[in-house]
Image (cartoon, rainbow, N blue to C red; front, side, top):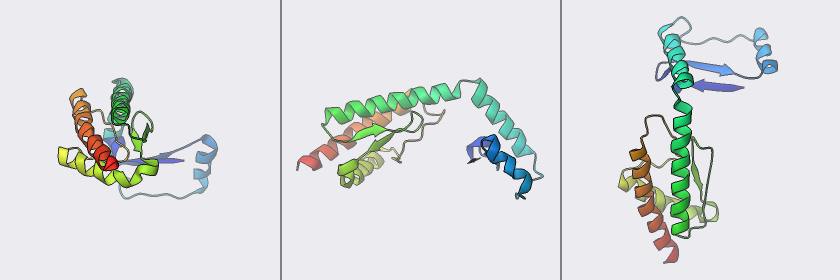
Length: 153
């Protein structure tokens, strides 16, 4: 079973749960309620959001931006000869620091100083432009360089 909230109605108060038929079939024996049960504006917002996601190529754009970020991060890691890996799904790339986890705070600090909020993972949104990805990689370049200097000190 999955519970989805926040983005499902583009900021309106709405959540849903979904799952395989055999799991969902048990709901006929379950009582569930919610604060906003009678509120219909959020339902309309949810339907509009889902239609937009489905019909306007949003997922393809998000995946493409994530692939661009992952490839750029991998190039930078190789350039600085760091023993870390890039993983995660395309929509949410993540740098796996492994045995070098003690250097993550240096990377995070440099990212923040450069103006990029560095969360693990990087959550890609449809609002992110090619320029946003390029800027993130430019800031990552400086952050990985700082890690490399610290690692070799």
